[in-house]
Image (cartoon, rainbow, N blue to C red; front, side, top):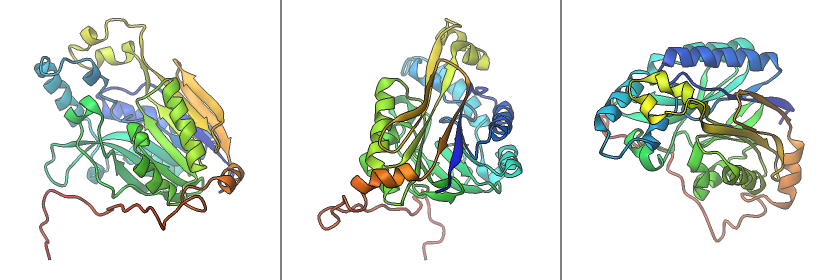
Length: 315
């Protein structure tokens, strides 16, 4: 793994506005690349915004507003088959950087009505290297997103090392983490809506357990950033000065030391320089899928094939 600079973009998304989210993302890539970053990471569901209202709406009691917001989210979701990420892909290609970004993804292959909480990895040539759909949406998220499969549960090689990404509370799923560790992971990327000391401690544990760099990219925004997204939002977010989510983006070294952040209650780009030496040092003593594993006693099977609702070529 070569020495490289990582950048985490902690900026408010343009809620329910895909075009503006892409403009903000491209501008951030331009800035981060100018700052020397070769790996640029955005938060969970950055395009077109994490649907934070689900944590404030009354279950079963705000159906009209829920439906209106979901339709807007669906209309502004990303269809990869339609190349909706073309501006961001082009920015990655132009600057020769690797970009990891959370998106609301619309399924266009089957129902065309289901959304997924997805993280995409874009290569330095602008190609989509991987698409991972969140396996288990958390609590009210299940009213927004479908469940993903394991086709994207894999690492990709890049100039920044071997990278894998899990979304938010997937980081609390031990077998999912292990599936990435077993692929020789160098950099564990965690786009998330979670924040706070307990979350940071979780990322530190992962860095120690996996002997890898951990890049936690948090959703940071204020009430004033979301109130104007749709009618009815001002009632959910009456205090315009409130930080609805502080962000808490951070970079953690193998072994668990915080080397950048957490960036709390502020916007900006968080930078850190990383390299492979701390990985080697950490795994000398603890390598959970190597010399510290017992495959004669325990094994993990991962079904990486697609799980589709219909098979039109059964033979």
